[in-house]
Length: 427
Ligand code: BJ8
Image (cartoon, rainbow, N blue to C red):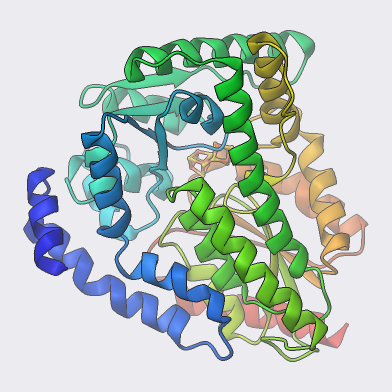
């Protein structure tokens, strides 16, 4: 397998020597975080296999699909409607970087005080150390935060890009603008794939992605129970894989896992003691392989039961209407789902996010919320003011944390999280 992968990476023009250094550390990092857990559900096997060959299995499938004439679209944000790409027989793969390994390379072209997600994403492309960044035929960016917008200009010198202009409010005229952007994106997708998007194909693609949303929703529902049948770490890994795996296969394996988890709930099989504090994470997304916070929280005796972020609830909540009669109706349905219901901090004002957080805290019976910010993300950092104020008003303990992808602050985070959990236990 290793030789086959090397051949593939070589053909992709990757820097094999540097990439080998990443391959050497990932299995240990993965083992330390995941394989140290007790009582792992059998249904995690699939996800551990994918993670164990993360730069081999799926990239090989994508290359095969390209040989059969399909085009691969790389994306960085949950605002990009996958349905459009799938309706034109294309494939979507997430590209956000979650490893410190890629950050120094990103810093060669970006200011140091850029968030690590952006630095890692550019670093992965520039350093030629991620196959997904090599495979994608076109990248799709979006005007969410300033850091991403400007970083896309740099990326655009190196790869074909399509940028979706995301309005930063949700007024009727903003909705209209976003619908225009979706239509423009559809035209670009047709041009890249050479395939026409029909209403039948689009409704079909909507069903596929809704199926994935329903499966992930079902998975999250299992975490609302008093008996918690799966760790937060495992769910985070599933969510990260959901961004690049085949959507139908993903739905199937998640549903199979949910059968097992629901059985566990019936038999009261929990992965933690009943008195383990239930924690919700909110804030910036956790791109693969960023498992740092979940690992610290759960190895400190608590359990993460919900993530209100884009590698959590913001990715799958709300479905798109499936029985659209015309393309115009379908684009309006996509506009509605993507604009109305994703409460990213790039919107102003953004009261829906605080409402979501309070509602989710209740639904998942959380004992405390950790409001996580990736260093240098001023959007989520600033919005933390409202998040923390409203949580305190609602009587829900909250801890604001800022971190990056390094392990330099791991001990400090462990101490702060430990003190927070202690405070919750004494409540
Ligand atoms: S919808 S959260 S995926 S933009 S953390 S790069 S905001 S400086 S990732 Fe995001 Fe879409 Fe919003 Fe979700 Fe910028 Fe902040 Fe970095 Fe961020």
